[in-house]
Image (cartoon, rainbow, N blue to C red):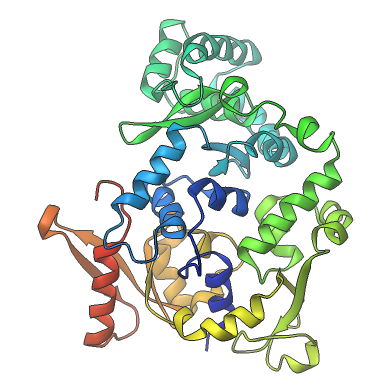
Length: 393
């Protein structure tokens, strides 16, 4: 048995149920999440579009375009703010989150340099070339950035070898350092921009929080909890890779306007641990009013849902077992190879993985069922597929 009501509450917190009023904009979604998985770029666009589209839209085309426009206007960007992983972040948040959380991955990158045949001098030269090439094209709203291939070619022309992972290392390191970011949409990718020109002035740790790390951790924690809760302190520690000590120092400020409770075996939340029968006894935090709102929208939360493979519902928590048994989680990430299939969800658990087959008017949904699905359920999944906001339609 899965804690389906815990999943339902998280679906609600994550903005995956239709909003009561006007939907949030893509930048509002990105900001609320602090950082949203972005290594699978088409999937990241779909994830943001699912959370910002008009509730009654017949297709996902307009929602996808909203996300791409937000990249072009410089409202959202991609970077390496934590864990050495690409995330989509509101442009006004990338610098301070990266300063807060990227120190560990940066140290790991420096340690790998000898194996790649790189040294600090080469990194400095790569930075100078990037600044020269990307700087003139990094004005938000008008600049088009530098395609990755063009930047690698410029490095090669400057005598910097980029093969065998060296180009990737140089670029990801300069992004994690806060020198560059991935900005406007160009030919199915986000182009490289110079961060100090593309990102809002004063959005670094000093400008946003006066250099106060505790205040910054509190804001990061608040965003994480409100967008993904119910969650625990350990969920945040896993996600951010900040220490529990640093998180707990900021926790009182972060949770001042939040609520907490305990999940029972079905995932329903209770104020007292002794009332949460069959649960794990862990205290979970969530945004104020979530329990009452979920009680009103439970039926909606249990309906069918199609998600991209790297969606935050799957990757935003330290344990994925809440979505299904071991076999179903294994089917979602075959062999634990880091490549996530797209989940089909019903009643708060994974019931299959899905793909898009064919093209144009002949494009169709294919589901690999992990639990048996009835004809009406498959029909509802098909209707969701017809409205799914995919890059390229």
